[in-house]
Image 1: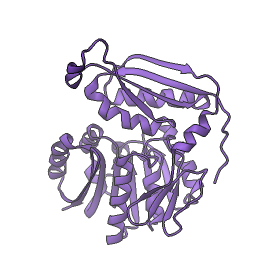
Image 2: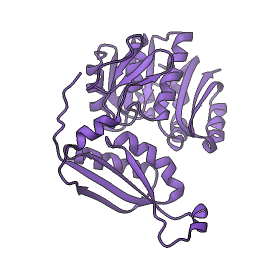
Image 3: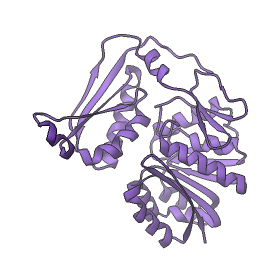
Length: 308
């Protein structure tokens, strides 16, 4: 698809965070940092028999091209603020020059998703001619296809669109635009992707162009509240997706996420850990939704629910 500059300067991000937050934060960093995130437990002077009960801090680190430094710093700061985290000793440092990008690219392969989709890095060919390709650069925005939350969302989206084809869809917290692009390729005529991050809107728009889907998708900066005001609180759709994280999903329910869905329409949610499921279920019940499908991959859960 696109030629990449494989001879470029790279930087490293590194910081410590409480262990109980590392499991939630690490996969989200995987979606922001092109080189992925590495988790390292800081054991210090513990004896071997004490390791299983270790509850100390965890060091998270990752790599990215220096040209993306400003964007990465902004997205990491926004993520930490969103999770109300105050990590210890956040460091950004230059790496010794080498062909980091080539090593990074070797890590990624096309990822088959669901029955008929495949997420393909833009520098590779599609090895699955019977699957619809979604061309995506890993790490450019949340939802690049490498994480279970995005794969679960795509699988549920495909399943829902097999059952019925809504004319319009809203993708809340669109990130890279991968769900919007997947929906358009699966036949949705009009897709609106919204995100509070202007960088995500820019990236999603470029990804739509790369996938030749710009004619079916529009992206705009904004929140659920702003969207409801803009639509007068009445112009809902039959399909809404939100692949974010559970605490943010709860906040979105408070802003009126359920009001975007018409009666009989469906809501696809992802980014949920097992212990967070009861709270999400409570919000679905409170806003008039009935759970219809639940998928699990590793520690993550995605849901599809129908509005009564």
